[in-house]
Length: 165
Image (cartoon, rainbow, N blue to C red; front, side):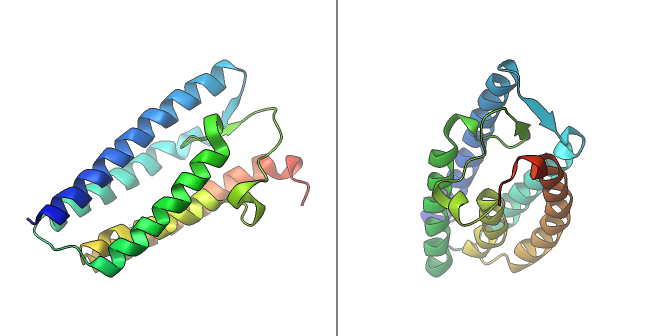
């Protein structure tokens, strides 16, 4: 394994674990403040999908080399991730949490209803491609598309009464 591969895999693991900690903290606080969770039944499937995706990258990408072009695209996606997290702030979570506050319409939400899902779609494909794992990108992109079809349907149904567009 090259140093670049080690650093990339380490970053990916550290980032995802950090996001889970942040999401759990934000979720707990939002629920304590009176927010409600929608679609909790399918959440374990999302966690399983993402854990399997990450495991597939780590296990099969261990001996691969980093492709600089895909790494550059992945780095650009991280800029979008930071923008999304900064825009949502303490409202960012991996669950569908409804609050009494107005929907966010600034930052990337000005142009997309679901910029975080757009980002995840891109990352599910691009991260494995950084290590040349085309089959991981393809299989998990298809599985993620099926999962997001359900998730976005559930979220949109819950948000429809609050949308002004």
